[in-house]
Structure formats: C-alpha cells, structure tokens
Length: 120
Image 1 (cartoon, helix red, strand yellow):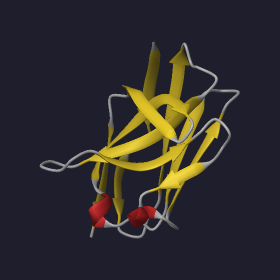
Image 2 (image 1 turned 45 degrees about the horizontal axis):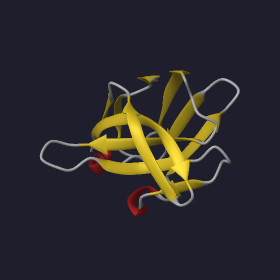
Image 3 (image 1 turned 90 degrees about the vertical axis):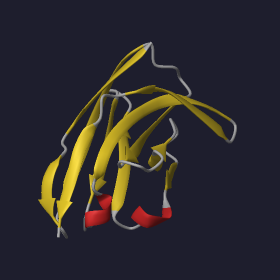
Image 4 (image 1 turned 45 degrees about the vertical axis):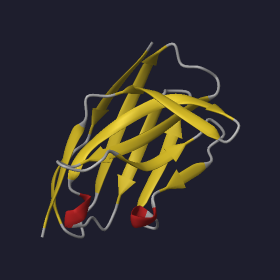
C-alpha cells in the first residue's frame, strides 16, 4: 500500500504560478513511477505529467514548457511546478503512484486531490 498526500493547490490569476507537492509513504517499490492527473467535471481524467524512478519525464502537450515535474527520492516527494497558468488549467489535481515495467506504467494509488483554480 502507498499513501499519497497532496498540497499546494489554490486560486491564482492567469499567468501566475503554483507548486503542488505530494508526499508518498508506505511500501514504495524500487521501480516506482509518480505522476499528476487532473480532472474537470464532465471530462476524463488526464495525465498531466509523469516521472519515473530514473528521472525521465513525460508531459501532456498542453503543459509542455509551462509545467515541470520533479521528485526527491530520498524524501519520497514529487512536485509539479506550474508556471504561466491558464484558465483551462483549472481542475482537481491528483497525485498518483505506480510501477513502471519497460515502456508501460501502471498507476494504482491516488491522493485525495487538490483544487487548482485559475482566474482570467
């Protein structure tokens, strides 16, 4: 079991920045991958960014150049730095944890979510 606790959401004006944090605890595997999903009402949950245990990252096209995912393996923390925020980034952001096997990542643990609201 892995427990995830997010923090750092809030209300910001368009063009502003926020940093989300996620603290992981429990039985974290060596090939652990972490990520951030977001969801808005009526839409499917979307993988925003992911990071493997080796530090390799992936981003959804809409956030490339604006968001940066990073992790501190020693402290079991993962961050999402969000710059130049846009109203369409408004969503509940969920931290997720899983395992990577080759090119496949399976996320199977989720945090409670943190609200990010970007005003225009």
